Length: 483
Image (cartoon, rainbow, N blue to C red):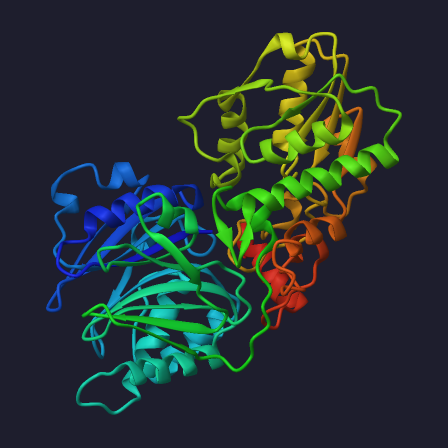
């Protein structure tokens, strides 16, 4: 999962504003950050490993000229954690192109092989984002033009859509054109469009990046749609895919997106409230025998759902953990050993909220199980009488192939295990999972026109690309380091 931004301003340099916007999508990636700008003549770029504030800590690093720019925050799902993999990526053939990408191409290896056979390019990284950049550049090179136009770009993107599979959202600088942004045919990865009163435009992964920087949300970029903002600020768009099947990622609403974001007209905050309502109703119906003194969230994402669970159950809602704000999101940390160490450093229990009490801990999801196990151990050490655990999402049992770091099934506590086996592993007195139908409904109510969601991590059903057992096994081997 990554965060992307693109901004057009009529005159002023845009790097500083992109920096501000990247801060607002920092939760989507903590591995690397980068900005590229364009002044109608040359491309300027700065990127490095680290958080946005670390990468752009000097005045020179933000002294990038140009009123058009794109930005990226990365957490690695394909390729390695190396500065060479930091985005944006850049090409000068046949015109200047810089690209920032969120998602995963599931047929990246096929596209890479195709491009190598054409002798069009060489590859410097293992990233599917570089494949996407070179595929677009190749398709553009096949079009005869004396002066590049929007129609040429749209034509090239139609070819890209016909070849690419997977989930992706992209922002690009295209020399002579301006900003180009497009979203996969299933709308798996989010992308939104906004503007401000000064005639500036922004495209970003989440609407929270717009509102936090003074932009007004206009709309989502539609599945299969390409949007061009010219070097003069004129916006034009076109549906470039003939195979639209709107299926936004359900895990965006569970965990990744900020609660103040709206994705495909669905409020993330309201979706999480409904998750809590449905989870509370399930507990009342199936676990009414539990004597719960307090509902306590595992901060931060689960707070919204936990409050509604407490409301439904008619019991006290309590904050039981102090969170160290200087440690990042453990889910997207690159190594299991780092995650394990970070849990203890990140959360500190408040003893008075647990001592001699039966508590229901609510988390947004259970992925690897180690965090849940560690938290329950800490709570018991602080004197809890009974520790019940509830997940606002169903069991995460399958690999994600569309840009979320859950490819290795052996890392998933729910893969091949029953709920009772998971409960025993994490050490809870009772374990309660959200039902998949309830989770889908929590999002669907926000936009009833969306009838299908990308929920493969729960169901094993993949909505985009030819996802074979062989593909999944190769992905598994790559994730676990096997050859």
